[in-house]
Image 1 (cartoon, one colour):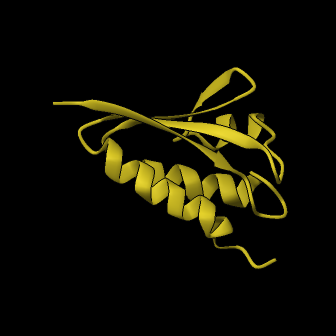
Image 2: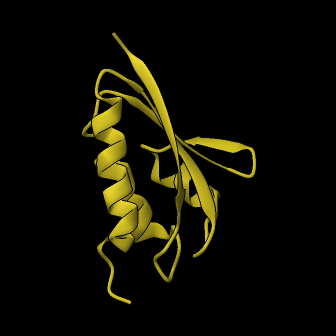
Length: 92
């Protein structure tokens, strides 16, 4: 049984969703079977695509909506939330 879960997250790292952070996020999402999207200001993109993520131009302090749809959607959202909370593993 598939499920769709969504969560609002804040970009906390200083440089926002730049190339390195977008790559980390895309690689993480690709480890899950769930379809994962990120939305900002009504624009929704595939979270598995670095280029699509960078087109959002998300800066520090911006809120994004992360949605995962599939059997491992909950696990995907937990992992993505941790990445956001850890500021994409970047030093300040």
